[in-house]
Image (cartoon, rainbow, N blue to C red):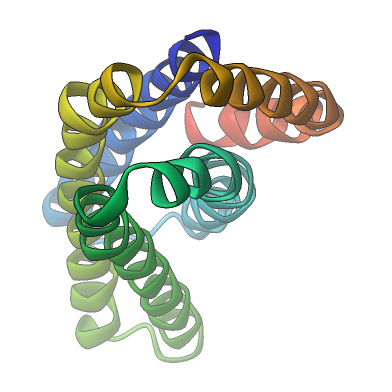
Length: 180
């Protein structure tokens, strides 16, 4: 399915970002300084791209059909796994942003520790999450969904991707800050 191929490509972009976020955390351990611009851009990238675009495409289209069509097993995989992990990721980003705001005001070690902890919790969760989706969840959908449902997913995904083209420039701006 082209829709799943597109989601996997987005995972590749997100994985590159996760690697960069981890590198930044390592640099904090070495020089003890926080690059606020990097973290603000990272939070925006996560919220605007990884969550609002990528996760919403999964939730609103692929996962919706998996829940409707695949019964109890689909429900366990999606509600008990993928959606829970999306919420956990949002929680880590929320706490990361709070920690960054605290650091801006206090510049203390506790805020630095929380920036590192929440950043790495997000990195580790998303790496595992992406692996599960790429190796199991997407294959499960491809194998179990009917051709009619796959066609609906393709149509809705194609429409969503065209709408997302408007946010491409913003994503590139954020990536330029993150990978400078």
